[in-house]
Structure formats: structure tokens, C-alpha cells
Length: 311
Image 1: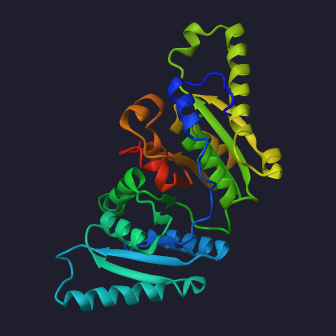
Image 2: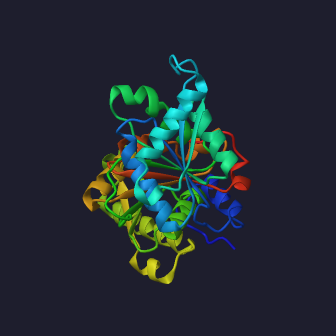
Image 3: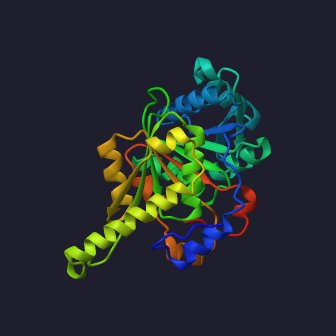
């Protein structure tokens, strides 16, 4: 039975009912790290190796060589040389990683290898500079938008495991699944659950009495939402609940900076366009503005099949 959650939009409540049979989160059975051979990929490779060792799961590394860019050598020789270069750069704790070098557009190659090898998490570096935006940057955006598996965008140099995790929620099942998955992956981290509301012209119509009523309703809403999540008793006690007014991406960035969060987590099912017009559509902007690493948690395939486009 789904609990009644005050303040929930009808489309959100219906989606909550649909999530009763949602699958239990689990660690990925293997990780795929995508590299463009630039220095910006080193941090992502180090993080992928750290997670592979932490979770004791296989690591794959993939590079996409664009067709027509193989130079004077034969394609086979060039791809072999790239494969050897990647293997030389592997950290010691990832020496047994399987390396894939294939011709094709980066996003397509990453998705093909991930599907073929059964990888449930793709790790890649962020690209903010102009040259990076043309190459790895466009790949990040494509994978965040359409990959059927979860995507981790690495921005910071790893300093051990993730210690402070910020989870964004819009009270939808996908954001709850994101919270549950993050709790499964990083059970010892400190967790903050943030719900950001963008209320137009709030100061013009919300008098102090109504503001107090709204604050109580918001608190009850996020408490009920968290109570419905599958969390350990220890993590439930440690979970910090936060409600802010403002654009979700701006509030997540602000909270991440205040908390010095290692990781921001967003849940994203592949639902229909109408759902995202009503509920959200900020995933890509959050990935862009978050100061630290961002994990976009994707639903299991059977739940994602109902939609065709992510936020």
C-alpha cells in the first residue's frame, strides 16, 4: 500500500503507485570506464579503479577511435597501439581490466561495449574546456540523456571512497530509487536528501502564516518520502532531510558546496516526454553545474522500457 504523501502532484502519486514492485537496488556487476586518452580522463580512470576494487567487480576500459582518424598505419595497428597505451596507463589496482578500442562515434561505441559486456555502470570524465566539450562533453550529454545504465560523471580527483553524498529528490519514484541505490553503493557515507521547490513569485503571495503552514507540509512530505525508501536502520537515523526554495540545479549546487559533498546523486527513469514536462527535466543541467562528481542512477530495464526519452 502506498502511503498518502501530502503535496504530491497527481502524476507523481500515480508514478509512486506504479513503483510498488520496483526492483531492489544492487551493486553493478561490472563497470565500464570511457576514456578519450586526455588528461581529463585520468580522474575518471582512478575513480573507476577505486570502485572496482571496493565492490570487487570487473573493470572494462573503452576508447572510441573515430573512423578516418587512424593515420598512416593500418586500422588494426593503430587500434592495437591505442590499446597498449591505455594498458600502460592503468593504475596498479586495475591491471587486470579488459581494454576495448573500437572505431565509431564515442557514445555509440560506449553503449555497444556496455551492452555486450553487461556493464551496469558507465564512468567517464567531465569536460568543461572548449575542446573537451566538442569531444567528451557531447558524449557525456548523450549518455546522461539516453544510456539505459547508470552513469557516473567524475570531476574531482579521488581521495578514497565517497564520504559525503547529496541526493536530489523531486518526490518521484526515480529519485527514491536513486536514494536507495546510493545507500546500497555507499552505505557508510554521510547522506543528505534535498528537495528543492521552485515557487514563482513566492514573496508576493506567501504571507508568514502560510509560509509556516507550507514549511510544515514540506517537512511532512519529505519525511514520508524518506520513510517509504528501503534504507538500513543505521542510515535512516543518519539521513539529513533538507527542503529549499529555488531552482533544483541551483539549490543542489549550493547544498553541495556547503556540505563539501563528494557526490551528487540523481535518479532518472526513462519515462515519456509528458511526465518530464510536468515533473522535471533538470538532470543534464544538474550534471553541468554540480561542483563534484554526479551519479545519474538509471532504473532497471523492465521499468525503463515504459518511456522513450529521459530528462
